[in-house]
Image (tube, rainbow, N blue to C red):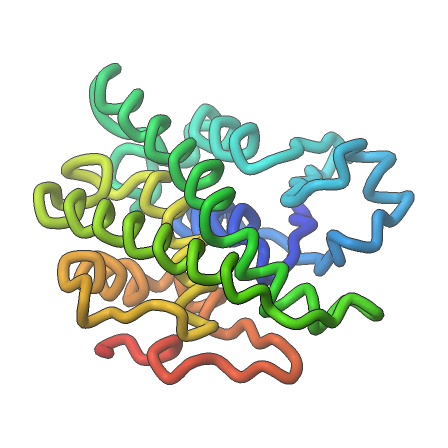
Length: 231
């Protein structure tokens, strides 16, 4: 069976898990500690980054971008419920918009928000010897950035059926990979972002999301909104 090397609180891994579930593509999930730099993983992906998808013939596809494009090209989406048109649905211009937003969330959102919060609130707890006090100035900047990004999601969700257009796409899954971690940590004031909240509730209610909702971080219970589908 196809195997996905992932870390449960890696946003890119979460995006691919959603994509696989939406496509009905069964995989074996193998937890990988991204900070361990395990030689066996480095032999497959020299960057040491997740996720990595391993097929039955031992071939490997590394990284969320490459995996999402491969899954879309395989034709699995033609018989799936993933937006009735695959991970990158629509016209040429529509598919370009999906890719623009995928890059927004996997790069810009990660760089300006999620990476620092994961390092501060998750990695400092789970990596031996890495405990550190949060830097107040950095966290203020991150929270400012988060409000900016949530307002952008508000804007997209208020003017489109899904973030990139009329169909569910990998843009939604990429955004949810990040938003779901922040929701777990309780870092989102949902009442301040009603359109983003409505979009996230619809996505979180889909069967593909169940696996993510079952994730737990040892010693850090989820915020009350995390498992509530009608928060």
